Image 1 (tube, rainbow, N blue to C red):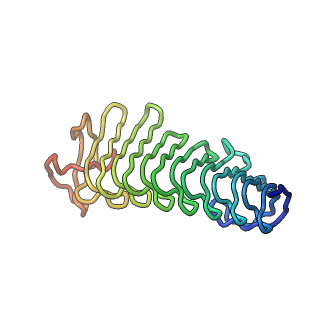
Image 2 (image 1 turned 60 degrees about the vertical axis):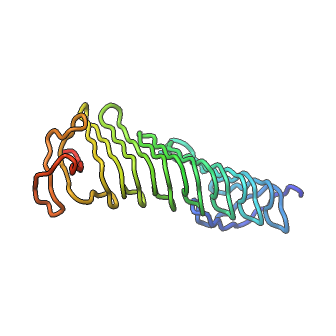
Image 3 (image 1 turned 30 degrees about the vertical axis):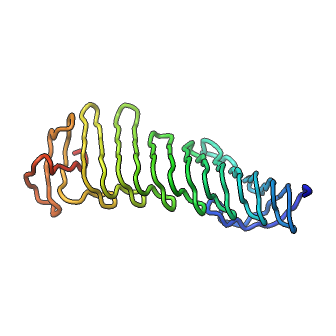
Length: 225
């Protein structure tokens, strides 16, 4: 195969671009289409370097975005492609400095992965169609002011199913075990403060909002007062 320069309109059907752009292609071709190793540079400054098959990104490749005003870094995806979409194992660097490393399917995060944000939040676990989904662990911290930890089940990015949440407020610790339904507790709600795993200053309510008494084994923490 011979190298060539080809200027053309290409409709990128993978989710991270989703629009038609003029581009300059330098690389191998087959039957007039990009095929094999090549570099595709768009007029907007976006660039793909890697493998092609029948005119589409396929195999290993790196896609970079130009750095814009207000962005910490230039966003970049590096990993596997299939039929023009991110598919397989890959790494994505977001323009705010956050990262994702793990599985992709049809251009979305899918399977097991790790997501890290520059402001202190981390998620390790399952993904489905771009959402946190299945078993996972998420932590968030803001210097020494607060810290949260959740280990359990997720559905479409929300706590859902069995899980454990630990929340700290300076020295006191809040802990809960129970069942979630799309980010909300099912059953009794406890509002207040926990210290060293014990109820400290709390009020309990049923699903109708009525205050009631309860035993320790029924306790479910909802949020700080």
